[in-house]
Length: 68
Image: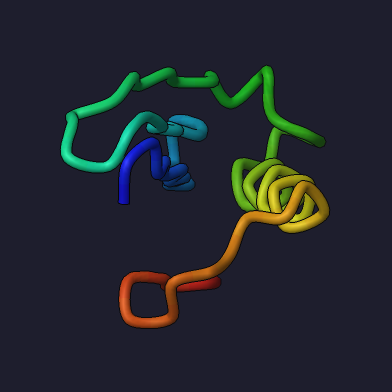
């Protein structure tokens, strides 16, 4: 899978962390503090970002995905 990429989001009490990059690498990690999340809610922020990725054509990997 040359050039295949991944995107991962994790909602936590402190905010939202996302990680993305090429499969087979550690990728890049970015944390969004609670105040930067939609309505100060990391789950809502994660939901918005997931829906945006799906609209761009990303696929959900059911065996690796946990939705709240």
